[in-house]
Structure formats: structure tokens, C-alpha cells
Length: 275
Image 1 (tube, rainbow, N blue to C red):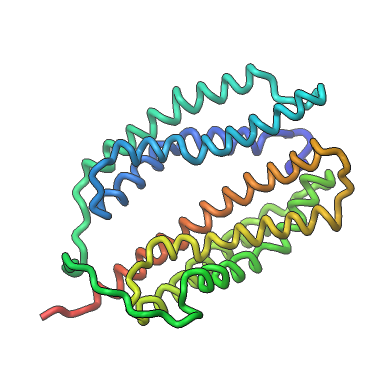
Image 2 (cartoon, rainbow, N blue to C red):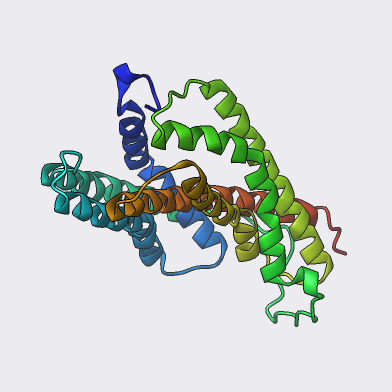
């Protein structure tokens, strides 16, 4: 068990409740950022915030559970639990997201440190190592390298039924992950801006978020070297749940990278003296 056998399922329950209640913060932050980017259709953005990520996770989880039902396994999640999840999603989480978005969009927008040119400049031809595909691929190596050893013990805890108790060390690894994602993304963003390429926002998200691809690749390596699964349902469950984990890791690291670059770009342009 991932936690003590006496508290089996406590971690998942706590994460689920925290995700539902943090809908207010999700709506508030997405609306504030969307308004700062001069967006107008905040309702559609809020709807995507409330539906897109949990919808993908729910569809994958429900599809995997169908295979478990087909095997007539006692480990299948009953329909009542799915109904309770839907009630929590549409009855609690989504209204909280819209509530947070309403207050976030009503807040006064932050004043940009410099005036934005109405006519975008042409981005010059980039050298091969500054093109998005290469920089994004390279940017995910360091964040993954900061966590892959701990990832081995977590996978062993989940799939080999080993106990995991070093949560203090896990917190330290998480702090190192945050610092690594922020640093590598800001460095890559600095090189990008020096090359006169100002399209930094999505590349900042993908630079650190690409570490999720390495995480999923490592889970495939772990599957072929450590596990002995032969049934199709077991293989689908493994890769389905690892894809959900990689998706969560992608959103987490990508968000850290984007907001680090957002702060970095704000600071360097605030230091510019415009006469």
C-alpha cells in the first residue's frame, strides 16, 4: 500500500476532496490569467477549466473499469461510486470553478511593465538548437532526472505491493522538482528571447511539461523489466493508470514552468528604462 494498511485509500480520498474544493482557485487563476492575456470569452475558458482535465481522467478511468467489469472482478468500481463522482464533479467542483472565475475576472487587471506593440515583430530564422522541437525535448530531461529514482520506489509501492513510508524525502524531491522546472524553463526562455523569439508562453509550458513524456517512457521500461503481466486487462490497466499519472505530471510541471517564465519575463521587462 502507498500508505499504512490501516489507512488504505486515505490518500486517494484526500486528493479527490482537495481537487474538488480547489475548483475555486482553479477558476480564479484561469480567469485572471485569461484576462491578462486580453481574452474576452471567459465563460468558455471557465468551462474548459472545469471539464477538460477531469473529463479526460474520468473517461480513461471509466473505460478501464469496463474491462474490469468484463472480467467480473471484485475490484471493479460500482456504478454508485461513479454516480457519486459525477455529483461531486458537476454539483460541487464545476460551480466552484465558475464562482472563482467570476471573482477572478472582476478583479482589476495588472498593469504591464512596458507598452505592447500593436504590430507584432517578425521572428527571425532560428538556429536548429533553438527550434521548439529540440528545446522542448531537451528541457524535460533535468526535471525527470530529479525524480526518476523516487519514481522507481513509488512504482514498486503501487505495482509490487511494497510499503512506502519516506514521505519526508518525497517532499524534498518535490521541492527539487519545482526548482529544477523553474530554472530550466527560465534559462531556455532567456535564450529564446535573446534570439528575438517572443512566443514564449506555450514553449515555457511544454519545456518543463515534456518531462511527463520521459516519465511515461520510464514506466514502459519498468513494465518490461520488473513486472510479469500477461493478461490484456492487466496491461491496459497499467498503461492506462500510468498515462493518467503522466498527464497529471505534465500539467503540474508545465504550470510550474509557465508561471516561472511569466514572473521572469515580468521582472526583466520591469527593469527596462523606457525614455
